[in-house]
Image (cartoon, rainbow, N blue to C red):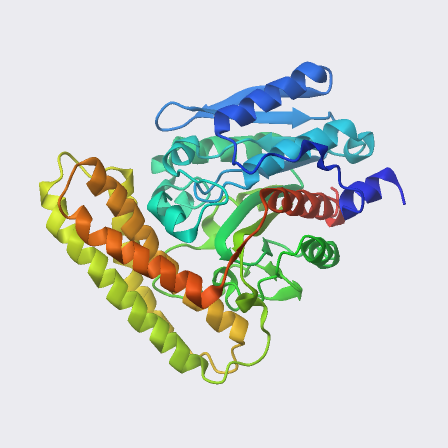
Length: 428
């Protein structure tokens, strides 16, 4: 086996660079990138490619000089922090292994949303309760990768313009976006199939004791090219949930298609649950989804009542925490309606569990963000949210019996899968 094959397969992973059980801040990633450039000045460069809405710099680390390029994006979702340590590990591994850059230059957007990263206060390992009490994720129109699905080009946030500018400059044959989920398993979404990716992906997940999510709610009805690898729909295909305005075909993931490339989105869980791996047919999926829809409506109404009471008394315009909470609360009732309308006959247990997790996390996220905002303003309405978050987090944990995935395993799995995707994607 060549050194290149070893790096891709993960059979001889170098764990010397394993980060401590703590997610690095964007500033730490920049310092690590600068140190790599200092060690390899002829091989690596670090430059600013844009500014966030709050004026924070967005940095791109480049390793190698080959014309064929891979772009790896970390931190596109503030509550999915595993991508940061993964790009740090990937960059170090590529710089140390000439075989990985013989035909490919590698480019790493260290954090696509530094403003969001500042607001999501993730601790490792923590608990689901602590996670939700410190939660932040911007509403869709403010997310770097999803904003083109919500707003016209002239209103795109600067983070999105920076990302598409890098894509237009590099014209990579592959973009890898490093994502995650709070609870469940790992899966990959691809804008175009990457034949051969499923095998190394599944091997890595098995070695690192990370379950493969068999029915992720993000990929309902999509073609499956192998266990855990889901191919995004072609233009013109119907969306599974009509109420959800997000459309992957308008995201920055599809921007790369104008250059003949493709995007792979790698999802890894913070907490693993074997519930999402059960491929047996569910005995009554429609009834189970009706229960999830009912719970989603009830929990949404509970948080909405608190917001309606507190909002008129909050000073100034709504901040990012309130905007994002309100976005979730506005979206959730129509999503519950979708679940009751659509046919789910023949659905697997994994799919039903995945949809239940989706329905439980939405009002928890809204409640967590709203609690942070109300606490900051010393609002008496905050007292009503704390018990809800505690009880719902406890119920979530009891239903799914999650186990923390060590940060080193999250990082290594994303590293291996990224290298495998680059290997199996046809070069231009």
